[in-house]
Image (cartoon, rainbow, N blue to C red; front, side, top):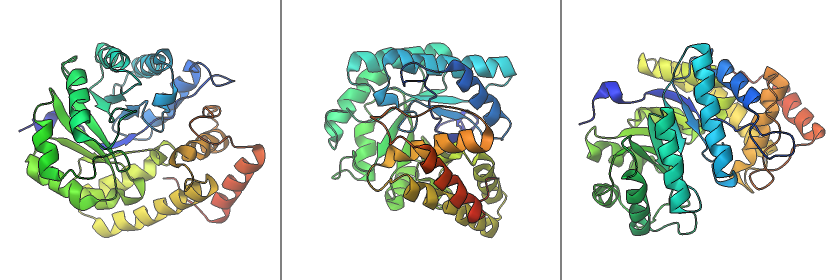
Length: 314
């Protein structure tokens, strides 16, 4: 059984990574502004260099710089929230280097997706995760993504296979199969720190036993996400549901305006637009390999529709 006091609970934005003009290198000044902004919103931690953070499209150096900038910013503002760092890279060597760097910086945990070049194979993934898990002493959280998960795995077979992975202590579940999620929570008997990934189903995840949520859109409506979490924890399920519907209005517009049907990570363009247009934080454009590049007209269209529809952010 995991000590409940050591579990992260609540809302963790999967932070965008601000790049320098041109897309190469991390804008550490913008990272500082992001961290300052979120420390004032009541979020409970940060998830770095995942899909929203464009980790697999960044160099090892850029990913380490992002992690260092977040920790130095928290130190500057006198608050340290738990941080989970996604470390999977294109080689085992780089993945281990990123994992050990995250541990050195003070991360609460590392997170890993399946091998980039060999998805949908639990046996291969477990061997990969073993190498990363044994390279550090901090917890390893598997980042379960629906389209890369082994479709033959059950909750029971997954947990049985993961029993051989050193330091496996948690899960970020980005899948809409919440029956599978509930089974993972139930069968693990409190031994895992479990988060859901689909922002549009955050409330449903809490109902199914999640410890909280890690997501992309919490970048831009963090206070609203925290309100949903707090209302649910207080037993105010109907209020939480109403707030989820309000948050889903934002998400629907982002999904449509960013053409997420073509590519899920296109949402990063919209998130970065909102940071700039609503909050005055310029985090620049995403890398072309990650997401579409919003024009000024695209930004106008997104922000005008959100205003017209009366979207709320807190």
